[in-house]
Image (cartoon, rainbow, N blue to C red; front, side, top):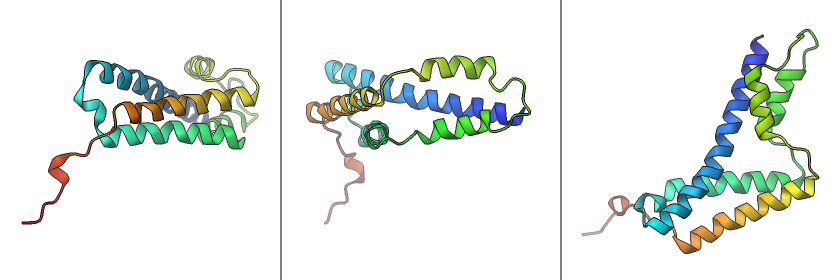
Length: 136
């Protein structure tokens, strides 16, 4: 039972990662349109860019997502469990996983990463001026 709970937790973290990437992009675009200053925060923008580049790189290299591997190992490594997936796990997995050719996922992820890079051109991240050290 513990393995199923841990697998569900990993699936929830995985869903949070996906939401961060997608919702982050939507908020960045809305922020560019609405002139929201916070969308230019460098820590947020670089973290968001790194998140989608990691996904695109994994897909293009044919690697499995570590969160997926970890979840599936916990969920399916033991044969003693009758029910290896809970309602929550099933719901999250139905949102996260789709049947499609690997090249399609790689193309979609790379295209999305390119869109995120375009936002860097449209509204580049800005450094916080309070962290810049000035010489007297």
